[in-house]
Length: 394
Image (cartoon, rainbow, N blue to C red):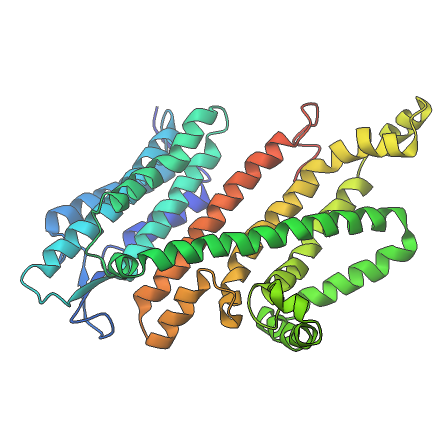
């Protein structure tokens, strides 16, 4: 039975409308070289009118599935949204090949606003369909990753090799993988250090009222310092220490490079971890603690067997938040010689090369999504089986 929804999903509705709004926008830009401005082409001008009609039809299907109720609506919405996502990448590759026919070798085709709008709209619709699939985990994961996997396969097999950002990638291939690994090393090491310190400070704050206020005051103040300013503040003292004690310089601790980056990222990661640790332990039911003490457990046994397991989901959620935040902040570390994907962003800004900026920015976004997904899985694994999701909402 088909009927109109009284309250359509707002995310799916907005995503569908955004997808439709991408149709008249410029999808691809043909430029005489990597730096010059060029002419913008709409969807029907680059891939062609037939492909534009097909894309519009799929976007309208997503809109209809948002506004009307049909059997297995979330599944159909997920399939339609994933089809829009895959078609977006397909048309970008097809359109770029078509525009470059007969053009000089140095000509470039850049992805225009219409492409990015279409990707954003499709992702929103995919996310809405995923959220509605609460009963079948397999279908939910297929909805989440099916379209992205196919799109990634198109990129991997060379379908979009003539798109300017992929041309930039081929020119910086070795440097890209080096900076990607450096980016992971910087934010990963920072979060690990922050997790150890933050959990310890959070536990200390729950055990000592005298420590609670100063600990949170200091971490809150540090959190308000702009990232670039904090990187700059650390340069002078670390430089002085490295000159005073040459052994520090020998192990890589200097005013620029990885050392100030790791310290700054660790500082920024402390607050969410410490706050969640404090909140998680404080919200453990007093009755559970009293029951443990009544059974003859020591205070350490109560913490290890009752408080820590019950607080673990919230602590891990704090680490998840800090990890995703650190992925983005690590980009700024490139300004002080620490490397990472931010190197491409700032090189692109310096050269006025938008596609080089995208080469650094898009992997950062993808890396943040991957880290978020992995951490969500760890949170699920760290949640005790008997703990109600509703009662322990994260």
